[in-house]
Image 1 (spheres, rainbow, N blue to C red):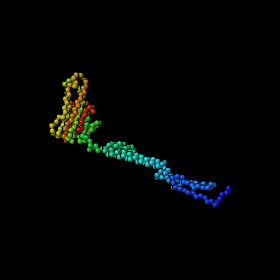
Image 2 (image 1 turned 180 degrees about the vertical axis):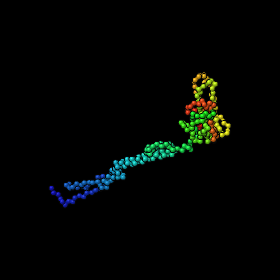
Image 3 (image 1 turned 30 degrees about the vertical axis):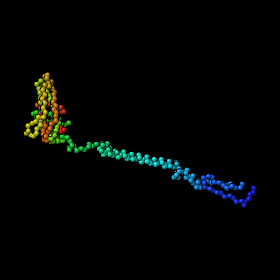
Image 4 (image 1 turned 45 degrees about the vertical axis):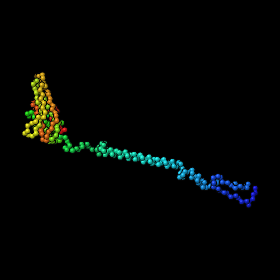
Length: 267
């Protein structure tokens, strides 16, 4: 097949516009005209597919989720800090805090806590009965160091049977005596009293007194009778006052240490 080689090839025209580029009419048998979208049009089309910032929708969604995770973590940390600050404020207000048991407290022998008891002890005393080798008339003597007996604070036991207070104030004073009578008659009786002395030569002042009678209404030979008396009330005592207990029949006291006692404490 032959053709005229002197006929020039047609030029390819690229035209920008809204429609398809048009090729000029060509003689039959020549190379056809192909149209291509302009380079600027292709770039514009790619830009629209990626969005205004050149980022695909999938990438934008991933960035948004990342920001949400970061802000959620920051919010949780802020909530924890707020709770810690609240607990610190409550602790400063004086709420009790549980003691933490440290390893040092678990190792070694137990030692009682050292307290300054001499400064903070309430004035008090409790003395109990004792068996006497000799009988003192009326005023009872007591055991101040054995068994449950004790003295504390500004109270001291004197050998003449007195509890001496060294601080003025209101005191609750009490005493109990128990008598064992081997020969009890319907007319038998006894007196139990508590009195105070302001100084050595002062006249005793009665604080409390009880008289018991008629406790063995039916006399039976060779039968022992037991009776008791209890006194207790509040009184104003002055510094250096001495308090005593009297019994009309001291020989008849039972030998029970805890059945006979005497005490006081400051209110």
